[in-house]
Length: 64
Ligand SMILES: [Zn+2]
Image 1 (tube, rainbow, N blue to C red):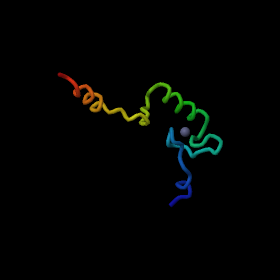
Image 2 (image 1 turned 180 degrees about the vertical axis):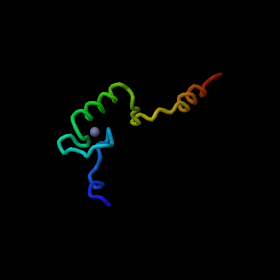
Image 3 (image 1 turned 135 degrees about the vertical axis):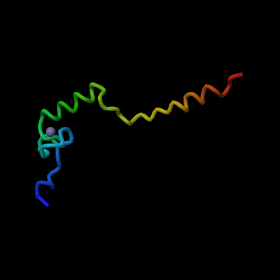
Image 4 (image 1 turned 30 degrees about the vertical axis):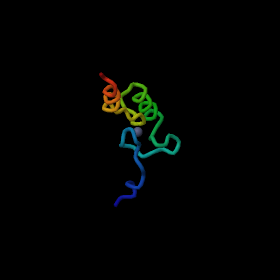
């Protein structure tokens, strides 16, 4: 076991150890790139559980 493995890696590049200043990233560059991805819509936020089945079921209620 190498002591290096105890250092958490940057959540963006997963290559460089996390710098306390830019936690949880290794550098400002990775932090900005990560934010850029979010703004770009590359990542999907799972905070909004959209269930299409519920919306469809709502339409079936009074259909006659
Ligand atoms: Zn990084």
